[in-house]
Image (cartoon, rainbow, N blue to C red; front, side, top):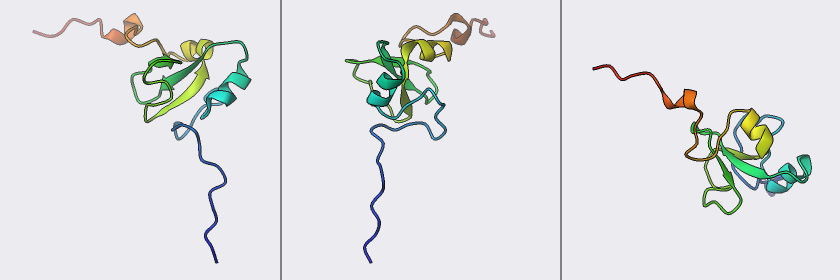
Length: 94
């Protein structure tokens, strides 16, 4: 008896527990937020998002496609633009 083929292979590597507004395909994200910018969010810790044309767009190991507005509301940011609170503003001990 032949082995059953998987029913679907995701286009990207979504997080194991992706939220309702996170998508494994760019097309699904575009359908969720038509007319808005779709970004690839890095779920692996940096909380950065990447736009189409960026070398990491759809490429990081743990990520998902999201609407940019929803990504920003969820705390994601453009690369190199971390929120001030996340930069560790506390002084280093001497």
